[in-house]
Length: 530
Ligand code: IMP
Image (tube, rainbow, N blue to C red; front, side):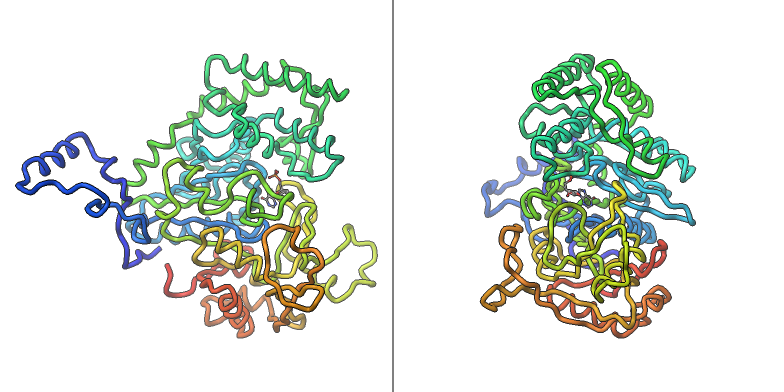
């Protein structure tokens, strides 16, 4: 990645990172000066403004409903950074979410998915940091690491680090999700990975963290948790030990969602012990704060903050109740790393799919196309359903984590624009630009119409979307294959360029990069930003 010419100011807290000798010399300068030292805001050297940005940092945040191609974008950005001779290593930091995320990756024809481990870790000079804002499931992490090592042939030793402060997620949190579903009669489902209960435990000050798992008394703490939850289950005439929870290892092996019984206390503890031993022998657990101190001072290190889920799934800004439990925006970086301010991040990138949006969950968005699954008789399909069916198959829109077919929606620029603005985004990366058929115009929503015919904008909260109709503009499409073969932006089909210019004009956010096909090198950047 090229070095931007403007703004090279380092973080304003840099004096805190000085050595003892430097601090003493700083004081000596003040002490020896003939002038009366100035004190107060007007003389402080602290400016929390745009020029507070730390040069080699980027954030990648989804600005639709997840699965936009963030993992892929991270991999492309890594390449850009490593092409800059000044950069010697890239750290990819996950700051929220857990293994509810699923990033599909592909290199040299080999495909696999990552859930907790930061994207791009298979690359040379790339390191992954699972930071304090994450919920970490140790057993699944162990299996995921083994899987990555087997598939890629790369050892993760020394490449991956997990924060001591990350929130501990166990099968107990997954069982709680099962209980929640039972109590709410199946409504408001999550991915079943225990994400909501793990964050809820943290907010309720009942949660355990990775440091608790490392402590001497870990078995006593987890036994208490198990027994308390078993008593709650019993009160509902349910048996905790027989509760079915997702089995990551078997799901991967059998390539479909597989569950297993949680088991008796001793089995539960034995599984955790195995994972605990793995994490400690691999030396995975670290104090991430001191790592960040080191990275912040090293001008040869680039830092990529990898968002999971997306602003449309944010606990507060998203499509409640179908939201996840964490802060998925750029602002989540602060609490999720306990070190970086969002205002220090140099490139603030949002990711969307170009020609459509996909959605997983029970929400029903206004631009969604009703599409049955499995398809019994496609001969009765409307034009819209035909298009959505083509998209689902061509772009393989099935959950990476759950294998569920995803809903297909027309792109909604009001929704995207709102998410980008609230998410702290300044530039867009547009993926899946090759998912287009020349003879099939694209419907793009830019606003809604109420019952009286008035045009109303997108508003957060599904509550406000009742009785509204999306207002579409129909845009000419292009041949997707010509997008994939384009080697520069100017080689893109004219209609594709017009389409991008339209998105940019409506959202007022520049589009700075594009993925043009499934392979890693199917990636173009527009001049002027990087
Ligand atoms: P949870 O994060 O497992 O609690 O799930 C809450 C909601 O967020 C559900 O509707 C999930 O389908 C959705 N969700 C969570 N993670 C992702 C993701 O990575 N992509 C798409 N949807 C997700």
